[in-house]
Image 1 (cartoon, rainbow, N blue to C red):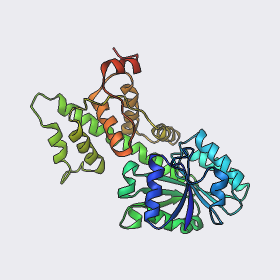
Image 2 (tube, rainbow, N blue to C red):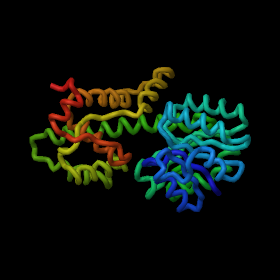
Image 3 (tube, rainbow, N blue to C red):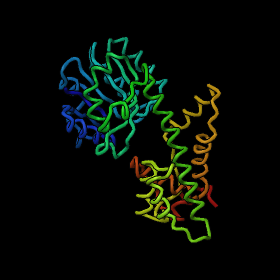
Image 4 (cartoon, rainbow, N blue to C red):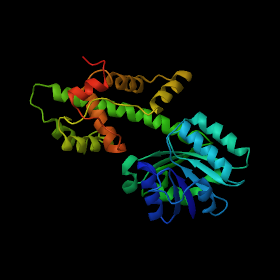
Length: 306
């Protein structure tokens, strides 16, 4: 099987490597010519057998809109576009309708795994038809973790369902990270001489709070026990906000997830050990950039700090 892949950043490039390892031929396109296999979208379409499959891994919003517009011009009826970025589910519906007018099919896939996906595999949440899912199973099987398919892959529902479930996944992720971070700050504030890093390490086996995020917390503490090199400024990708919007629309109480998002806003005003921990976790699982914890730089970056 041979597919196109648009967007060869941190996630896309690793996905290309894992797909090739799984026996899927990949033609990659990126605006960076150093990593791109072809010079433009027309060349990408020409390099693929029909009906074509093009997987898109670019930032949500205007960039994804632009890529869909470009693909609409070079693809043909029967071809398939898969959006694997962090697109808002309502945009999926717009893109599906836009491409359907040209006879081009569309799927959305929520992808989790961050920079570790190349080694461990990616959790996949798919929105689309049964026929499309069956067609793409070889690709999904190459990307997902080893083991039972249902433990790393779900056909969540029709178009939009993949990104909807990934949105909720990320909202849960916000709350779990915030809980670990607040626990870290309390342990660190104690005057009982607690071995903070050792405590988190001991929680990895046998406890009810063990998880992959906990393992990454331990890894971050091993690298920098006091997070001295990390500023507590924490960004948010947007999916947490979308989760809260949906919760409000459906009258679903989400006190933990909402608090974790508001805590990130606090991080942009005051230096906080808990927010340093969240920043460190985001860097561990997703390769998200962290800011150096220098007072002068922090004051320049966050003029509200006192």
